[in-house]
Amino acid sequence: MAEPAALSDAAWPAPPCWSAEAAPMLRLFHHQLYEYGRGVRALFLMTVSPQELALALAKLKARDISHFVQELGAAKANLFFGRPAFVAVAQALVTRPLNTLTAEEDFMLGTLLGYDGEQQCRRFLARAGRGADAELPLAAE
Image 1 (cartoon, one colour):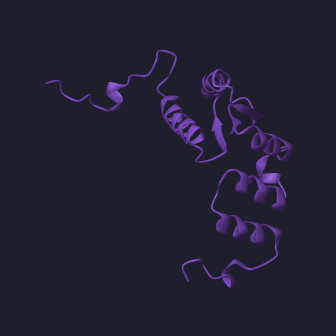
Image 2 (tube, rainbow, N blue to C red):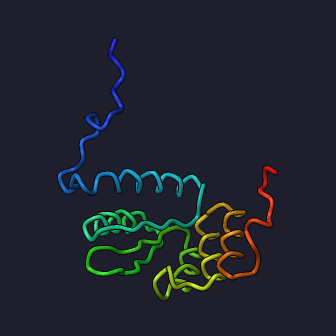
């Protein structure tokens, strides 16, 4: 009887176009593609190098998945991808560096990305100066 195949990194060698540096990002990227396909989340954000970006864009284009790139300089870029409506709204919001978004824009983007709703509310209140985080009870309290 045949033995079951091992599911280690050695069992799945990286294609020749992958570098050792790109492999961890690509594992995460493939997991995100799985989540996208299963409808777990509708929008994803990854900060990637130019080499990683080229590999990811090829896969997104081959699967006809909506996306856009926010250049961060020569060494990094933010890659947004997911359902077309979510990507379109994110692209409308992300017109400058993420750390310069208003409290409202940051809240909307975090919500679109599927971040924890309560944490997004707390972050919004703190960034907008509209409430002290210590005054709010945690969900478990």
